[in-house]
Amino acid sequence: MKTDYTVAQAALLVDIPESSIRGWIQRSAFEFGQRTASGRIRFSERDVRCLALMQALVAHGMPPNAAAKKAPVIVDRARDHALVAVVSLDPLRSPLLIPSDTLDLTGHAVVTIALGPLWAAIAERKKQMGN
Image 1 (cartoon, rainbow, N blue to C red):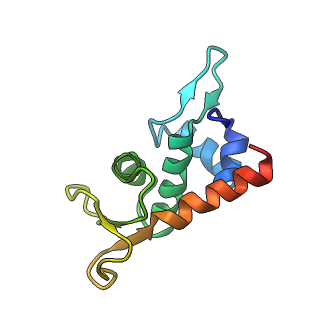
Image 2 (spheres, helix red, strand yellow):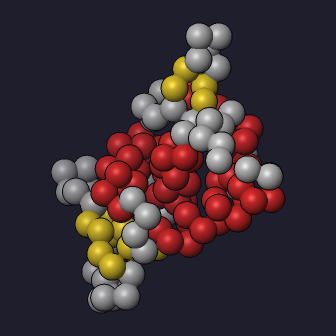
């Protein structure tokens, strides 16, 4: 299984324009991904999940820098569990992870994101890419 993705491959897996990721890199919007000796960025599976979640948070109105700080925390805590991330736009509030089938907080949270479908979409795109 491939665990080292280029910016272009990560963009395909996350289904966002490569230019968005490159823009985030140029603005130092996130601290995940590793630079190779030649200066190229490579993303791990975890990093790809962080990008997917970051994109979802940005789509819900969170600034990229704030989304980049919350995404790794959520990804690391959630691992492979079918959870829902409940995220406040308030930078002082930590994200809350709850089982996807427990309770409905959609009326009480700023952003709720089902992580299972995000992870499944990445896995499906990996299959299509032959990884």
